[in-house]
Length: 128
Image (cartoon, rainbow, N blue to C red):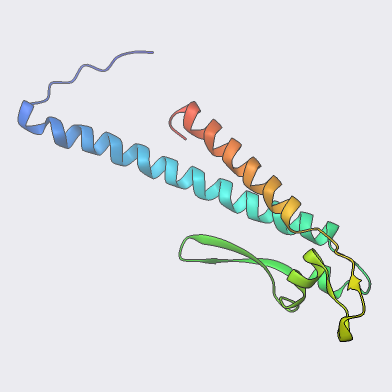
């Protein structure tokens, strides 16, 4: 790799270093955002595949939105059922329990691990 030799006054050194760091930070920010979008898309696809599928309406209503730079994965129409299906619940009248259909936690953990690994690779690679 060729080394660039450029003369910089000592008073301007902080500006030059600041510009380099700003450029690097902007590249990392874009890369992390790209990885977050990929991870949330993969999570939605996995949830649609692994959700209980009696009528198909619950599994089809998984989606994602972006609010304030954060991707939110949610079940748009049947958000009230997510906890009940994931963890099971007591039957009406207290006569036993309904079995759980775990599908959220395992997919979320997998998505977070993949996101973490991809961001780590991105940062090790250097400039995105």
